[in-house]
Amino acid sequence: MQGTILVLYISHIFFFCKIIGLFLLKLADSSADDEYEVAETILGVANTKEFVANECIFENEILTSAQAAFNLQTPTLMSAYLNLHYICETGSRVIFLSIYWMRKIAAFDQLDGRTQIKLLRASWPGLLAIALAQVRSLSITTIITTLVANVRQLAEVDKIEPQKIRKLSEHIARIHSYIQETLTLDLDDMEFAFLRLAIFFNPHMLLRKRECNVRDFVRRVQLYVLSSLRKHIASQLDDEQQAEERFSTLIITLLPLAALESDVIEELFFSNLIGQVQIDNMIPYILTLSANTSL
Image (cartoon, rainbow, N blue to C red):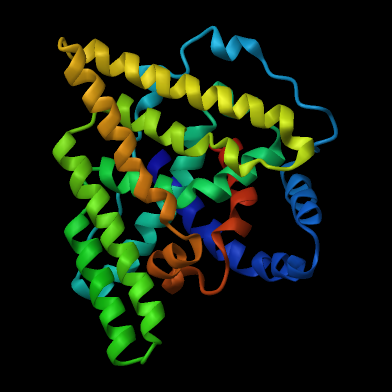
């Protein structure tokens, strides 16, 4: 029953955002601060107080094994004619669940609404790639082959400029390569969870002067996440050198995800579902929805 409700929630939020996106797109001429003020209004929060770090975050485990689970209800793969819909539905479910999953993490809950939105907007393409690599029940072959075929059609039928085709193709290759590398490493849920947190808690996305306190907190959380990942790997392997090599390898595999551009990923995964509406504009609404939804 809960799974059915979740699917309905996801379907409705993307349809709803298609409408409200028109309103948000009017913010294009406004300042970035104005945009975040609108997002905070949606969330019912306000970034009016100076950020103060909760030191209890660093006195406890950053996450538990129960929190690490990423239980995605995968869409049903129908006929080849509906493969693009399968991709769009997969992407929408992953984004919703990724945000809901973050809400279970105490360090995420410590952030004000403005910072949550900012970090999610910067990290969602990487979070999508990590989920595609983690959820074994997804048909990755279908996703990749359909994306390649769609780009080929854009090149041959729609005559899209070569530079754009090249960028789309590079992003498909980058995602596919990450998934393949991750499969060979056979990560457990805890390792995936730590990588998800490492991608999200990125202090380099908080460069404004007034963000210095929260930036320091995010940097400390990211370091704590990486330290926790190293300890987890060491607890699973007897050989210290093997453990260190695995830790380094997992971090290196994340580097290509930083090159994923949100507008390109949107075109690959969501153009057939949400048209011109940007995921960035939907994130505040998904945050609100996830706060009132139990999975």
